[in-house]
Image (tube, rainbow, N blue to C red; front, side, top):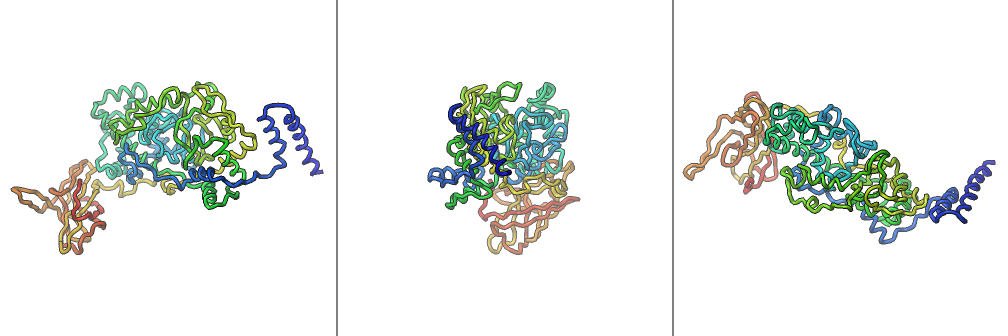
Length: 571
């Protein structure tokens, strides 16, 4: 009886399908009907060897072809490990919001490929668009769905003052950071400067912002221009640190990369991780589906703006997308042309594409980690990958602007194959695990004593020399002057010296004590104050380093001294 029961259902479907196939409907409907009829009788699709042209296309998708993350010339801290460490802390710090409950990681969760699983991001309130993944985010100049920011550091600042996200005025943001000793030390390590004092609420109202409500704007306008500039400059620096961290968030290999590696070695066959349906879907992805037109390269995105006719959610006007975003980027006080940018070449901003062609266009997202980033599209309108494929298969008229997509003509079987391929794009990370979770609290050393010694160096010594000068920066982050009296080193006895020149003669004399005023930095440099090591037990060799201990009245600090070439001249 069981075999008969199994035949009855396909037989009914066969009768219906053949009726449609023989005389009713469009060619697309006939093909769909045949797919329904034939599906129970067909096994996996045949795995066909790739052509040389297809192999070249496949090779272009492999993550091992991804070049190093480019440096951002507008961000002086791009690629700076100390800045990335500072940005890492800022990214996970929920104190940096109006309610003390929202951080960057609230919406950008590592476990969801740095998205949040919601149709629209939710901080203090609900944002207007879907949260984009941060995997490979530093590889695009433009940020957000509409590209309304032209750098990663400018983008990092925007959520802070968004009432639906952090809801915190920039003056409040810098004040919270400045009140934390650990942050002040980290800032000094990145910039070489003392973090400005924003504790005077008369000069720096905690709710002052040029972008928020009328009260915040009025408080901002009432501030002195020099104080507004100080806030903006510090705010921009913190955004640059966050960007330095986010630049580390890179995708790691997935099942696609494993398959591409086998293809490169001449093995086109299916595996448990990348089956025949996924291979058939990949063939559609690079061919009939025309997906490569936008989703190309190792990140599976061209990071350009396209109108693909995605319907707005019920009750909402169509999203104008890039046509508004490009205007906002040009007006942003932190854009590449601003005083806060470290480079003003700004080719992308100067020669941006505008006009009717970008109406309704949004930036192509990466498909890396896409299985973890549902729901999809710029407002989370589509819940599943099957729904996304169906959207592009139909390619209906856009509500605003012109839909660049064209109907694909996929039959259901092909759509399933394309989805099977997309389901292999699981999230992976090339980023070390420690960067993917909240950092531990600042250590005692980081937020300990008031004296911070940094940037120490000495020249290599010639054979037979028994002394060497050490130069460095001393920062007092406390409210009381610090007095240094002693220096200790494993290489020789240390003391404080001062060099000067008079009547063409260089003079050097011993200094009993060195005062570092409260909240100030003292530089020890050639031709002035320096530390002198005498009775050297061995020559100093370029490339080596050693520790130096500094002592004073109830204060001490340790610094690593880097030995430079004998002919080294500081800038």
